[in-house]
Structures are given as C-alpha cells and as structure tokens.
Amino acid sequence: MNKYLLCWVLSAALLCCGCGQQPQPPAASSVPPPAASDISEPDISLPDRSAPSVPEDPSPSIPLALPEGEVPEGTVVPYTWDYSVTVDNGRRLTLRLRCEAERKDYDAWYYGVRSIDVLEGSDLRQTLSIQLADAASQFEWGGDPDWAMELTHPWHEDGGLIIEDLNFDGIPDLRLEAGNGVVNTRYLCWLWRTDFQRFQYSFSLVGYDVRLDPEKKQIITEDRDASTYTTKYYQYNEDGRLYLADSSSVTL
Image (cartoon, rainbow, N blue to C red; front, side, top):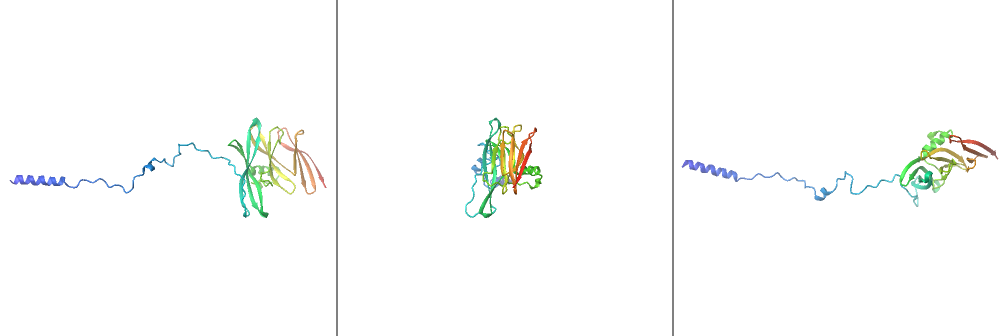
C-alpha cells in the first residue's frame, strides 16, 4: 500500500512540474524595425546609377547684371564677356573674359578683367592669367614683377579686347587693354602658337594709337609724354621676337 502511495505522489509531482510556465521568448527590442521604404531606398553614400551625372561647367557664363538703386561703394559684381576667334585649321574658339564691375566714387562703375578662358565648345583649353602676363610685362619694361596687377583697368564693360593678326602669320592674336592713362593705353598681347595650339603671352605695347603695317610687317605705336610725341616701329627678328626697330620724337 505504501509502495503504491509513493508512486502516486511521484507521478503527481512530475505532472505538476511539466504543467508549469513555459519558457518565454526573449523580449522584443524597443527599437522598431526599419520601414519598408527605408530598406528600398538606395544608400545615399553611393552614387546614383539610375541616371548619368551631368559634368560641371568648367567655365560658366555670367551675364552682366548691375544692381539698381543705392549701391554701397566697393560693391563688386562678377560677370563674363565672350568673344569668338577662328585660329588655324578652322578651329573656332570662345574667349570668355572673367570680368568684375566695381562701384567706386562719383557713383560710377569701373570694369576689369581678371583672366581669359579659352574654350573649344564646352571644353576649357587654357586660362590666360592677367597677373602672370602683367608680371612679365613689368619685367619687360624694367619694373618690379611683384607689382603686377591682378585685374585690368579698361574703360569698357566689354574688357577692351582687340583681336588682330599681330605677327602677320594670317592667324588672329589678342591685344587686351591693361590700363588707360590720361593719354596713353597699355596693352597685354598674346600670340597664337601653331606648334603648341594655344595662346602665349609675348609682349606689351603702350600708346594712344597702335596700328599695323602688314606690308612692312611692323607694329607702329604713337605715345605722348607731356609735350613730347614719340612714334615707335616694332618688327620681328629671325627668332620671332618683337624688337624696337626705329623711333622718332617731336617736342612741341
């Protein structure tokens, strides 16, 4: 009897243990799972392959737009001015002058050119630096290159660029107004190099008048210093370098 009673007690105990609470799964995270839209969005750190990227314009065009009304002195407005030139082999280039208009005294705007971008279509071929060209010009005239200007000072909003054949090879070159005095104007000149297919700064000229003589292959300048008028005749040597061939002066 006792044996049967003991077996019954053990069976009841095992049954009670098996009917206890079942093990619980780990608690759910308090952070909600990402939404379906978050999973489907592309990673912003990776480039979007769905459409081809548009290359940035290396030399954007900026129309001249001067502010109206009261403008504080010293206000600077950047803009561009385009010229077109055809060089050898019929290549058509755009000369994009990087200009600035500055509001100065007497309620007037002063204009200047900082650089010239040479483009073929939308491709930037070279940039002509005013500061580097003027540093060479200062050295050429016995001045200090450290005093080279970063910006030209023409009287024209178009930058004062003249396109003409300065070395009489049948290809246009560049003559840019660097600064205007009371009488004389100084010019920075770049020649087109057919061997390098680019413009190269070559010399500067000074005068209130500059003209070309294609027959004699001379550049003639007229300048004035006080009451003295000087005519200078420049021509090229065998190495293609410009030199002063002759001059004459008259004092009134």
